Length: 408
Length: 91
Ligand SMILES: Cc1ncc(COP(=O)(O)O)c(C=O)c1O
Ligand SMILES: [Zn+2]
Image 1 (cartoon, each protein chain N blue to C red):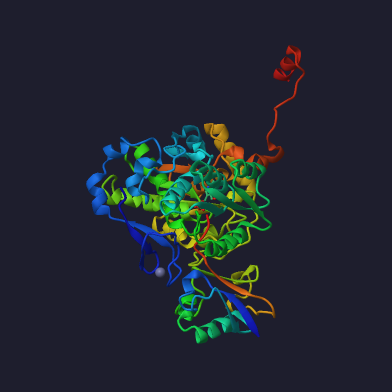
Image 2: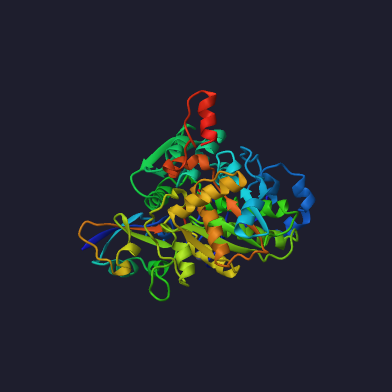
């Protein structure tokens, strides 16, 4: 069952039929999936959701596919961990980690890809493709294999080794491009107009792809006992995820599944690629694109497609934004690991370091219930840690050698 | 000087279906003005009321986004091509 009405331009409101199309003919604005909320209201309840599978598909009434069946590697319904140690370190009372390192390919991208490629199959598209900063590549490669689709995956050639390996292992075509992500993205935007019967998940089927991120909002609210958090911290690359988390909270309120949405949304970026955070901090009403220079490669989008909407969402919800250095994000990875036992990739380091900054600058209040979205697994970006991690000591294989270390 | 301009799907209803057109112009702004002359209606798709490039349109001179150059005032050298690409992609 699908409650989708169509696609509508977020800028000018023109309506389009459901198809593999992402930008308005008139103003180039992004197309958004719209739903018949009155019809959804009649069938959905907290109980109907709770009776669903332990995956994103428990929210299929609010996703744009017909479930015929959906592509499913077991994505979603990841743990929401209370983070008391980290909270007390920061002086917060109620802090949670949404641990999206636990998805099938180790990042939140499995949410958006499950939806995008389910829809692509439904639309009769046979080839999966994407430009990616790494995590999306991993996820598209895996899901295309699962779906039996051919794949063309485009990444900057200088990605982390593990992200390259994990994109290649699933057997699709992995195209390394000599250029940064924005150049890869532009290439794919042009290729998508030539190969228009391929599903470029974040280009021509982007309206469906983006909807997958709403499940990050749905799950958090359900896991908090159908309570909204007060404040969430979300990493930003294209800005799609942050914008859709906001849409998710709104939908729950619209459907009467939660109270009114007053969630404050704050954005996290790496200093070397922080066009949204800089626009927020300088009160600008436009996003100035940048050339990325950061070890947080997964977030290195200098010309973010949804940057403007992310900025607007942060302002509208009374959130804030932070830009953190590579040193700070590495410290963020370490802090989360040693206080809570969760190993995040560089994007998670950016989120935690931004959380630290937003608390110390007073944007996040001590009595707020806060959720930090940890969206990727640390095993993917091991090399970012450099020589900062290693054995505490190296000993000889005998008791004396260990005891000597112990009493050093 | 004649410049090759790549036209996105969204605008091809205005260019008789052509994915690539040739127009005269020494700067991006001149090219847009001349595009409008030849293919009426295309100007307002690219520029907003104040004459600035619309938020969701990217224009590239060869490999570079003109926002990193001199925007609409960017000069075009002989043999260089322009691409108009919808900005709503990626993530
Ligand atoms: C781990 C991780 N977190 C967050 C993001 C940001 O997502 P968005 O592009 O929707 O802002 C990305 C994007 O690639 C990512 O890989
Ligand atoms: Zn429009």
